[in-house]
Image (cartoon, rainbow, N blue to C red):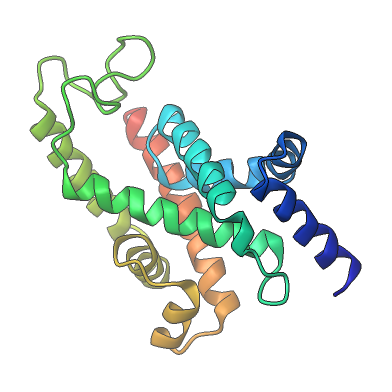
Length: 194
């Protein structure tokens, strides 16, 4: 075992034993990366922060399964993050009618969420959100749209998508990154009336 692999394995063994210093070290190393990944796909800062916390709980719960001979620690952390985000998105799409006090209606201390019309219902807002997402996805180049749909809506891994599209994995990763960045730009533009 190489030195970095050993260091990572020992860290995860300490995390598994609930060593607080090890958990803090794991968060210091990967917290920003997990946050950035979650922020790319979730609607609000509160949702993102919840997801990050849930990812690190999952990392702690599965830390004894980390095997440095199968994957680097960063790869393992991001795999768990991605799986958690897909699960979260699937749960949201399975129950689009959010509670009256959901993030889609209140964002920031009782101020209506960006783009929300006063008096509109949660169903109307969910429908508008789906329509807006469809419009934004429709404005992406075909490869970016396809990769995002397959990765986040259908749950395929990037490697599976690369095989399906007969494209290099690097091309698929780039398409995903560029597509998510463009969706964020489009969301910002629609939120400001553009």
